[in-house]
Image 1 (tube, rainbow, N blue to C red):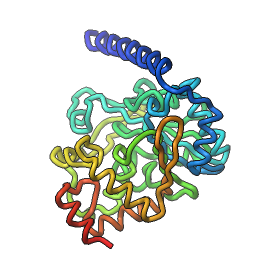
Image 2 (image 1 turned 90 degrees about the horizontal axis):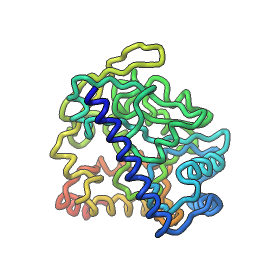
Image 3 (image 1 turned 180 degrees about the vertical axis):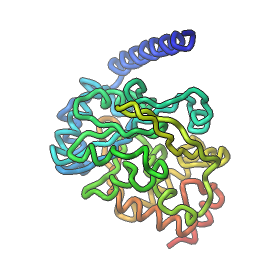
Length: 308
C-alpha cells in the first residue's frame, strides 16, 4: 500500500514538473509547426517506405505545436503505410540495468508498465496500432507494416539485441534507418547490436553478470528472460557518458567521412540519419581496428591516428 502511494505521488509530481517545463518552453522557445517538421525531416532524408528507429529529445526541437503527437503523426505520414517507426520503450524501475536485475519483486507486465524514455515514447505507446515487444528492460514499441514481425518473440531471443530481437530484425529490413532527433551520437542503443552479433569476437568483454527476469504476456504466461548487465567501470567511459564528448565527436566524424551520416536542422535542433546496415558495417570496421564505444580517450587518440 505504501509503495503504491509513493508511486502515485511520484507520477503526480512528474506531471507537474513536465507541465511547468512545457509552459516555460512554450514561452521561450521557437514554435515549430507540423509543416516545418515535415519539411525539415524530408531535407534530412526521411522517405516513404522507411523503417525508422527513433531516438529523440523532444524539448531540443523547440516548442512543437501539438506536442509529441505532432512529431509522431508527421513521421507516420512521411514513411507511409509501408513504412515502420520504432521507439525505445525501455522500462527500468531500478534506474539502471544492474539495479533493475537485482529487484526481488519485479515482473514486467506491458499492460501496466509504461516507459522511462520520455514524453515521445510515452505518447507513442498509447496510439492505436502500436505494438510492443515483451522484454523486462529493453522493450521496443513499433507502428507500421511490420510491427508484429518486429516485436514478436523478443522475450525468446537469446539476448537483448541478439537473433530474433527487434534490432536484428530491424537491420535486415530494406530502408532501415536510425534517426536521431535533437540528440548527439551518444545515447544510441543500436551500438550494442554489434556486441551481441560478434560475441566473443568483440574487442572486449563488456558484460558484468547475466540474470533472468520474469515477464508476463497477454495470456498470463510467465517467461524468464535473459538480461546481461554491463561492467560498471565500462559504463563510466562509454560514448553516452557526459565526459565522453571526444568519443561522440570521433564517431560523428568517422561516420560522416564514410559517407553514411546525413545531418540537418530539424526544428531548433541538429539531427541526423544513418542507414542501419551501413552503420552496423562501419561499427564492425572500427571494432576490427580496436575502436569501440568504450575506447578510453588516450587509446582512442592513438588508434585513430593509426587507422586509415
